[in-house]
Image 1 (cartoon, rainbow, N blue to C red):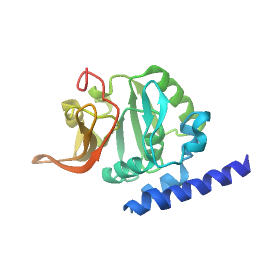
Image 2 (spheres, rainbow, N blue to C red):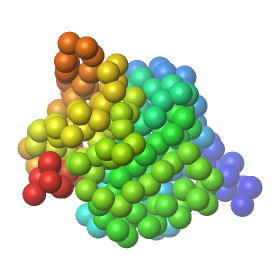
Image 3 (cartoon, rainbow, N blue to C red):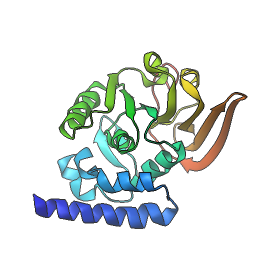
Image 4 (cartoon, rainbow, N blue to C red):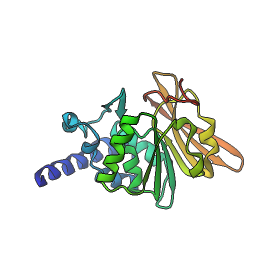
Length: 217
């Protein structure tokens, strides 16, 4: 087991150096989290040898675990710190939530696919991520009872920014969300202040569809 851990630690270090730092990710909190979280535990056993590759991987139910760089880019764009409460829409494999959990006070994550919800909750418990709170629901509606959130991250492509999520973002809060058609999106960063909503594009990306009442039907 120790031999495997040394191997995976080395693979994570190489992943950070070649895929993430090399593309301009500089936030030390994000880099430390990506170095620490055992990504190979968030994919199926058949794919563990590919866990640290520079690409997304299937996790079942027509869903994917995002490319490591995209996870790091989205996390850095959120500008989170240790006191923040963050809402994630689309738990999926749980990897993005785990990265956030290494940095912030609490992560609230919503998943609409029951099999992924159950599997990921068990993994969070096994890895002792006690600051991750999970919910089986339509993520496009957010989590009103726990709002407002300091940051919101959406890990699936939306046709437009869901209105409930904007409403649940605190003043001074940030949201990162892919917006576009079913095949390609722009990664949008949204900032909310007293004057309203401000958006900037972080570039092109491709995510699975955000399905729900305020997403794709």
